[in-house]
Figure 1 (spheres, rainbow, N blue to C red):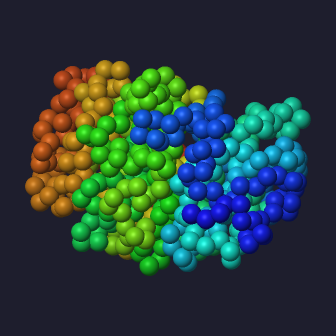
Figure 2: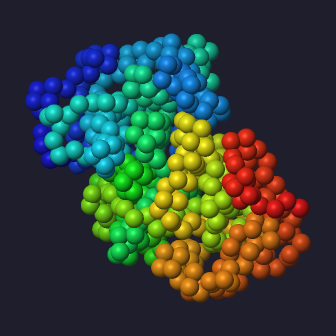
Figure 3: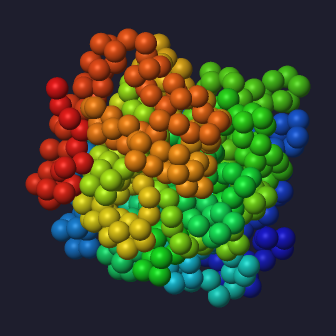
Length: 536
C-alpha cells in the first residue's frame, strides 16, 4: 500500500482500547519502509539481490506444546482438549494480556489491518500488533492486503511481543514463551518467541474452529492448484512434506500453498495472501518459481549469508527450517482471486522416514478416510522446537497441531465432500527410498512430480487399469508403471534389495498405524476400519 503510513487521523487508529498506552504507531507501512527500519536498526541484512534476511532468535520453528486455548463457554464443550489443545483459565490469559500490553506501552509498534480468506462469504478481518518491524512484513506478505482500510472493522487481533517473556512460576504456564487463543475476546497473544509462523498458525487455528461450527466450511492444512480445465488438485501434508513445492507448478495456477477452505458450493479458497516456503537446499533448477519469488519484498528467515551477500541455501547451521515469506503474486502463475472449483484429485503427502510406503498409491474410499484420520508423516528436523532429526509421527487430518475440534469432525466433512465430488485420492511419499533415513535417500523431486502429473492427467489409471499391484502389508494400490519414472522406484521393496529387512520395517510401521488408530476407533465405522493395513 503506497500511501503515507502515518496518516492516522483519517483511520482513527488507537491502541488504547487494547490497554496499550501512548505507543508510536506505524500503521500499514509499505514494505520498502519496513525494510529501511530493519536495516537502520540492525534487525536484518540485505542479500546481494536486495532481499531482507532476518534471524528469529531462539525459536526457528513452532513450539506446539506452548500453545493454549482459553477454556470458556464457547470452547469448553467443543474443543478436543489434550496435549495438542491445552486448556488455560481466562484469569491466566487476562494476567498475561495485561503484562504484555504494559510491556508494549510507550514503545514503537507496527500495526496492520488485513484479511484472511479469499472467499468474501467467509472473510475474516484481523489486526496484527507487532513489536518487530519484520513481524509486520510477515503479516503483510502472508495475509490478504485490503485496498482500503477506512471502513475496516477488526474482528480478531494478534499481538506479537517476542521480547516479552512470561514467568512460569507466577503466570501459570510451562515456559517463558507462549501462544494463547481467546475465542471470547477474539484475541491471540504471542510472547517470548520471534518465529513468525506462530502468527499465521494462530489465525489458522481460529478458522479451524469457527468455519466448521459456524459456516459448514471444511478448513484444510493443504495447498491447492488448478489446471487448464479448471480441475483443482489438493495437497495435504505437514511442514516439509512438499505442499508448497509440489503445488507450485508452472503448468498449473497456484491457488495457495498451505491453508484452504472447502465450501458448500464446491469451491476451494485460500486463507492467505502469500506463501511461506522452506528454502533449505532450494535451487532454481528444482524449484524455479519459488527461487524467483525471493526478490525485494520477500522476507528470508534464519538463512546463512556469505561474505558476498549470497544466500547459502545448503547451510543448515541455524536450522533446517529456514524459510521465506512473500506475497502470492510473486508467483507468476496464480489464480485471481485465490479460489478454485471442481476438485478432481487429493494427494496425501507424507515424508516416510522408514522408506517402506510406495512413492504413490491410489486409495479406496475407506483407505482415504483411514489415512486422513491417521495423518502419518515424519517430523522433519527444525519444523518444531526440540526436533533435531526426523521422528515418525501421526497428526490427525495432516494438521492436528492446528485443529481445535476432534479429528472425526473434519474427517466426516472431508469424506462427504470427497464422495459428493467423486475425487481420486492418492497417498504420496516424498520421504526415503532404498532404506530408512540414514541408509536410503530422499525421493527425487522429478520423480514425485512425474507421478503426480500422471495421476492428474489420468495416465496412471490408463496405464495401470486392472493392473495395480496390491501392497501385501498396506493393501495400497501401487502402480507398476509411470511415465518418466523407473519401474524399480515404484516398488519400495525392490529399492531395498533386502526383503527380510524391508518387511520387518514395513510391519513395524503398520503396527504403529494400528496402535495410533485406537485413539479414534470408537468413533470410526467398519468401512473406515477396513482401510487399515495388515499386521504380521
